[in-house]
Image 1 (cartoon, protein in one colour):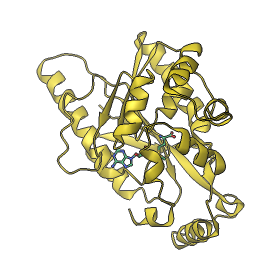
Image 2 (cartoon, protein in one colour; image 1 turned 135 degrees about the horizontal axis):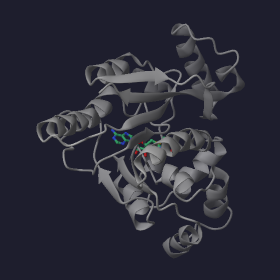
Image 3 (tube, helix red, strand yellow; image 1 turned 45 degrees about the horizontal axis):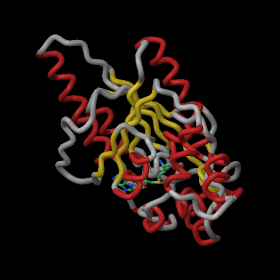
Image 4 (cartoon, protein in one colour; image 1 turned 135 degrees about the vertical axis):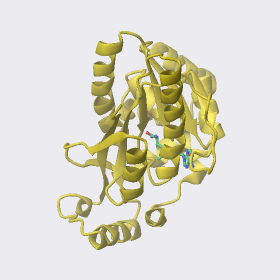
Length: 272
Ligand SMILES: C[S@@+](CC[C@H](N)C(=O)[O-])C[C@H]1O[C@@H](n2cnc3c(N)ncnc32)[C@H](O)[C@@H]1O
């Protein structure tokens, strides 16, 4: 996506063996969106738990070091994660394992994670933040994910649309359609997962909306106010983002003018 060009490149901190550098930079930039999306995902999980009465399988796209899982499965906040990882010298793997072990884990949530960073997934798996990590490029053409993950109830993605877009959703939705078709053939009940994800206001949603429509999903923008993702890293990032938003006809007065990226929250449900 062209809009990505105005954002700072963080590739080097996505691919370290530990989340230390990632959290350090995100803390500097006031990255807070994962705290804000947590209750939105949890509200959907509450509904699913009421109807399914069994553990909920969550697929986290662009999961990085299992940030959503740390917050949701281990009920942590970004500030608690930052306190642990950043307030002393970088913790060892052993100390990190102990840290998570001491947290209360919600065994009703099973996380499956996809990320292009094998290092981030390895960390997440080693710390028991997920059942399994899948190291693929979600944007790859002809990506075959069939059989890569179990039945999923909820697909989430925080702060990573832009890196991944309509191709990633098409790759996941292809698997779901296949499962829907098989269930009809075999007369077994199958409930397609709900999707919930944040999208920065500067990203055009046309292609993503089209993909969900093609796969018979309703996609709606939640009516909650835009949420802060993080602060701009410098004045260039701020100026370029604001001018891009203005070109798109989006008023930034109540939002990005305060020096932060803002995101909308989307939910998609199958029509079938
Ligand atoms: C902003 S970070 C993730 C934030 C994380 N979800 C959180 O809540 O803190 C974006 C993630 O997307 C991953 N990513 C980028 N391009 C990708 C692709 N093509 N396929 C899969 N993952 C990708 C990066 O490795 C990185 O971990």
